[in-house]
Length: 462
Image 1 (cartoon, rainbow, N blue to C red):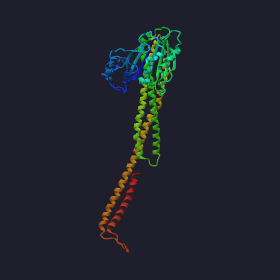
Image 2 (cartoon, helix red, strand yellow):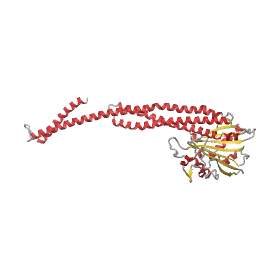
Image 3 (spheres, rainbow, N blue to C red):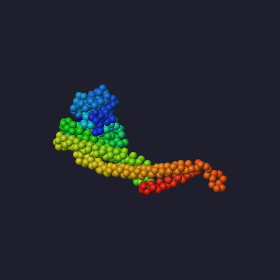
Image 4 (spheres, rainbow, N blue to C red):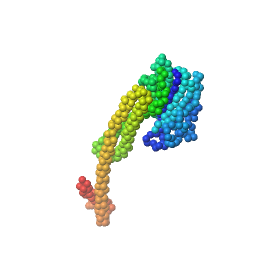
């Protein structure tokens, strides 16, 4: 292959809707830091290891994202243009040059790191691919939170078996890594050259789009003006890649949130059963009911946040699907009305399916919000009723005891004043002391007043 180039397009989340303009996510600078590590290890280009000093995002080597607010364009380079990172010699006798383009695309950091031979006519074969250190450009090293695309371009003779060549290139790019053997997703055309799209999944996290690698191999076997066409549509291609990865990323977040919502919904079912068992008991446990009602509001809040996040994800994925379509249409206009069929299929089939799935999840969880509210109101009503009955019972008890002890005390005082000597029944060997007599009369009087008070209050509290 001649005019060979290997490009990394990586996209990393800078901030979310909940952040203020000068705030970022915790690992927002991870993309830049990992690129610097590349410059210090496997790709020691002179200016890659010194990348911090060339970005608006850093001040004296310290990540300072607040400085980005003042920039007027998408460029994050201080110079406002692409960065020439220098040249590296290889054991094969040719030099490799590197070019880096850093961008801020709304809420996303984007980088295009392109490696190419210093002399365009240098012949690059499969073994020589390893001089470009493609393994260091894979997700495990770059760790871009939204995802990445590796793009290869090369020019060959018309007689070249391009299918076999593309397969060999794809395998060589991921050799010796945790990614599985790349799968050919689609074969088509892009900018009048052959396009081979591969997908390589991480064997440890096959469902995580951030750990997958999209590989695009463009082979020019007809001396087409692919380079010129690609350059004229560069921004649209970059933004299309960005929208593509964000769509997959947002869908993954939505599925995670839906799973959390289902779990909370299951907890709601358990609480309803717990409530039913409490109120069907002969004497509802007021303490248990209060404990239950103290748990439901927090659970309700968590559930509501899940539903709201799903609504937000639906809005986000709709926005990015629209952006994807705009990019695709502009690429088509630049490319004589043609775009890869797989890109069209992604919009027409996959995007609609993902969007509809999130809406289905929203519809499924929506009734749970009303059930939570009804459960809280029902438990609160039962607790208030039980509390009122408990308070009435306590009030009645206090009233009865007050009357009984008050009446008993009065009788005891009166009787005690008239008992001045021991009471000695006929033929009773030991006379009863006046104190005992006083206590006896007091007890009898208290019991009598208690019964009278209980009888009258019973009629009152019915």
